Length: 621
Image (spheres, rainbow, N blue to C red):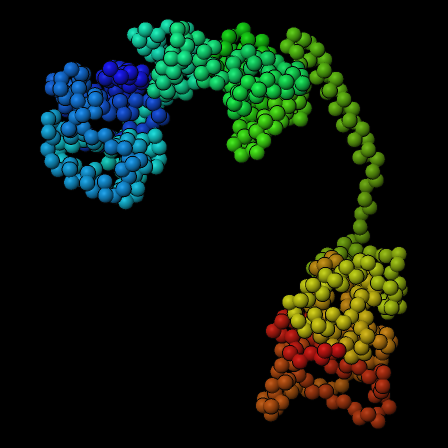
């Protein structure tokens, strides 16, 4: 007869044989005894915890010749056929390979037929979360109202992937991980009944490595018994599973505590030469540190599913680290485990992690202190405290020596507040510059500083969104900058007059780039400055015409062909149209030649120009 693996041979046959699932087995047994059998069940939990075995036990209890019963006999024809998978009334469906809507449609057609031999037709759908959404939708109606002789049992390791509409139609049972002690007890029973000689330490090590799965534990025991040939020992289990071993872990932990980096690297090199997995190195070291942390917190390791270590070793090594440092070390190892998956050089990742553990000052912790000298630790703490107090005293003395700032005059405070609200810096508040001249026009042809050139370059960059303004100022160059003015020189005498159209936009950009409310000054080839006209202000060195009498102007009285240019000018320049009586050129008070200037002032704050507002027929130079 062919050999049968231990996990198949020792699969539970009754509810009493289930390990670690007392709540589930008791609930299902009571349901069968009371006749309250559900039409659909959902079994969820980690692998190897008994979901499929429980489904088969339930199927046996429903179809046993002596049932329905919570204790199937296992000897009748129905129980034997269900156990070996040849029953015509129990169907095991692998949802991973039968996940489409066609398979579910075929199932819906077959559930209508009555059972062949037993009382119920039982459909066990394993890994049900692998079904497609269309298959789930096709199963909904049948799952909600199946025929009276049909029972559905859905098993999954990822219940969150099962739609809520499916879960709501089932009775859900959650299978928990089996504890290491329960696994060890079961392994001891199986080993005894199977004639396998095994050490208690070997069984305990297998139980920890099984990670809560009984099937995994039985598979490991089966493999170790085949390799050992005789008695299963902890050493043979470590060799089969590729474990690092307690000896290396303990030695490495002592080296980390004492900061012996050369020993750490040499030990790691030996493991790599021996073919050990780098991931397993980090995993076992993390488990050992967890054991130290639990021992420090609880003072015992009983019922903690720890890494099967002697208590005297835990007591000695836990004294070398503080709890905070152990937690920091565990976090660092977890980071290294995550990096290891994508690292092109895994060995370097592990070396960096181990060296980081050996240098606690880089992790924000104090160096390790020997546990045998608690008094020395207190002396060192007192010395560090005294040093910190001396530093605080020196800093306090230095701060007290700094003179307090003088109080500002109330008038200046009001001027500063007004300057903040207006966005301009009054001359009285503008910071004095050692290079600033007394009059702005005196330095218009002075060589521009590097800062002025940089500001002008940023200005041109900002003006690229306004083609007209950019074309106008592209022919200019910075001629000087103070903390209140910015001078631009042009080689044409007409360009300064054109540039003043964009003065508001340029001054706004200069204020944003420099932080100062700079006023734009444009000069031509004759060095005569052209300033933007302001209401109520005079140009330097120019005579102002006496204000002429003004009267209202009716724009509707203008011919349509003349009205459009006026409206365009009002839209671009802002303000209103007024009629001003200008005296004759022969009047003695009329200015002539260079003294003639703009008679109608522009409004104080015309709106900033946009690309659409810019003139379309700007001269090119």
